[in-house]
Length: 89
Image 1 (cartoon, rainbow, N blue to C red):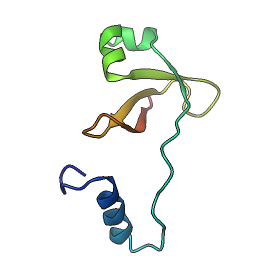
Image 2 (image 1 turned 180 degrees about the vertical axis):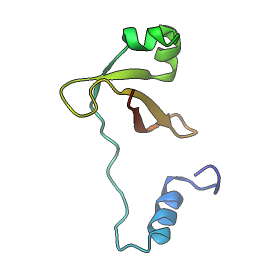
Image 3 (image 1 turned 90 degrees about the vertical axis):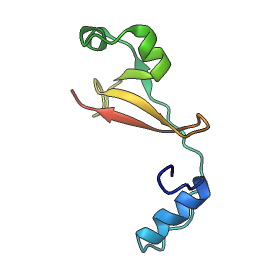
Image 4 (image 1 turned 30 degrees about the horizontal axis):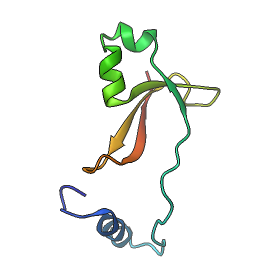
């Protein structure tokens, strides 16, 4: 969005055209309900708890394939959360 100077709707249209797809416009808001927490793994890597809180870096808790993965939020320029990125350790 930032590189092309597009807003959410413009980026949505751009991706649909770029994929040459018959996919319809995305109208639903992102609804992510993962249980995330700060743990010893993050602390052992030298990342302070306050930094994790500010940047929303946590480890996924639960019994899914993402359990134990480090997660961080991706936000747009207005601060709205767009997605969570999970990194396996």
